[in-house]
Amino acid sequence: MPRVGLSKTDVVAAGATLADDVGFANLALGTLAERLGVRTPSLYKHIDSLADLRHSIATLAITELDQQVRDAMHGRSGTEALAAFANAFRDYLVAHPGRYAASIGEEYTGPEDPMLHAGSRIIESLEAVLHGYGIDEKDMVHAMRALRGALHGFATLQTSNGFQWSEDTDDSFDWMIRFIDQGLTQIGSRATPQNGQDR
Image 1 (cartoon, rainbow, N blue to C red):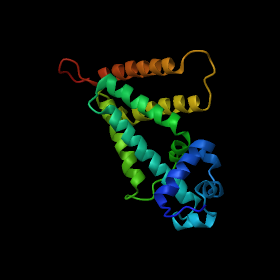
Image 2 (image 1 turned 30 degrees about the vertical axis):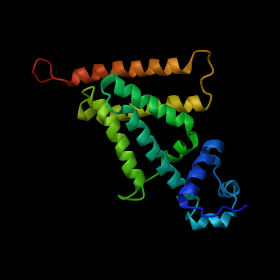
Image 3 (image 1 turned 180 degrees about the vertical axis):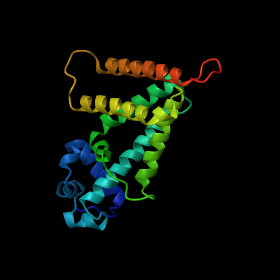
Image 4 (image 1 turned 90 degrees about the vertical axis):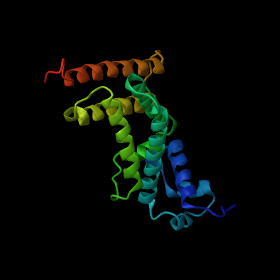
């Protein structure tokens, strides 16, 4: 039976769920229309194209991830903030691999793009974590890329059944956080002048 009162929000939410279920690469308007109980042309009342749907899903993913990360980090600093950010990031990717995949490489449409604003807030959260370690500004971009790469890689491998050893995945993730924590602590200590002297 056709859906009555369908909105773009409904279409994007259903598309995000479909991407999680079948994989972002397999997202198709025909399959989405069938899931929503409408004909494919009806979707164009709410989205311009498959590319528009993909961008909207990416925006949803970044917005949700931003909120999850900020909620987890609230009131935390140092090692606790790192662990909160890392676990929130992994939890989101594992729960929503399809919609997260939509955000990888998706370009902003302009300065008013909601995805840009949500992405900027995630960067601010990541910077807050790194500032807690005293990371120098000249190292900030490298540190952010390294941390994002580690979290993305681990969570992506986990969702792809890339870890097939007997050891517990959560234990390995906690070990990685401790490893990153020690590395950031060491780098931050080198960036901080000792005894009031310049480096």
